[in-house]
Image 1: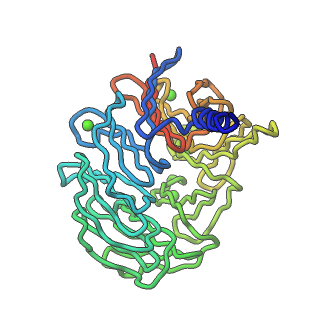
Image 2: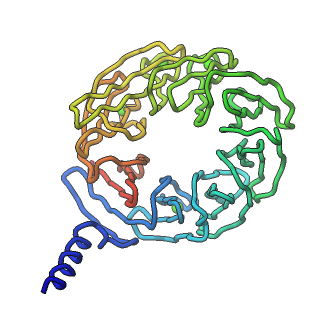
Length: 372
Ligand SMILES: [Ca+2]
Ligand SMILES: [Ca+2]
Ligand SMILES: [Ca+2]
Ligand SMILES: [Ca+2]
């Protein structure tokens, strides 16, 4: 009797703990604001994309997990899945080469870089241990920062060059924003600028390590600054570092209509302690343009023209299954209830006059189609 009771208890626990939901579980639902579908994947989600990946005119949802890549149509039908990329995937980027007919998805894993075609085939695999960062570079190549310098690959996975051998890097980017191609590499607390032949143009100490650099001209002089995810601005000539404070989440938009991109970032609140967060817009000198408090949570903000007035709004996750929409002056103008709390990734686009939002938490990807 006791034994049966224990077995029954275990069954009930399994049923209600969510273990009953297998990989591939699909759910469809609707609320007054949107309809949605939800799909459970095989392992934790690293990245999501909403793109016309195969360039046939219809958008796809691409989901990169620790073990696989999934491709769905907008109705949530699985078009293909690649599971042969499983040596623990770390990073995903879509390469949109103009000279190639198709986009490819590049996957950086622990010991390989993979290229996945828009039909879900693995095109090539490049063996590389100890890579730390990957990006597309001048349209037709790939830059990889590693513990032993920079490796440049072409889109066929062939090695074009290796620069700074033996130098342990935290990140590297290719920049062509001034019309002059250069490679900017970041060893710890250091910046090295190279030309495309690998000649060193500048080598300088800086105050912090740069791990997640964004590049944008936020002073309006045509020269791009480096903005680090942790809330730092490195001036275009690399001589000055501005610390914005303890901000982690960054979105770029012009908040004061002067034609110069600004930095909007936020500090999350603490829901349990009833402590509000705040959202702050800075200009390129690090001066506060505006600062507002809000009950915001911790996901990446996105900028998007939500109401179609020609200006971008800022969308941030709020407490209690909400997303908040702020206008560019920091005023809360709308909020929407969403079917999950604490999403990790978000992509939002207007497709055929519908706003499509793809969000994910650890194991589930959601597509929300708003009713307008
Ligand atoms: Ca397509
Ligand atoms: Ca600038
Ligand atoms: Ca501005
Ligand atoms: Ca707008």
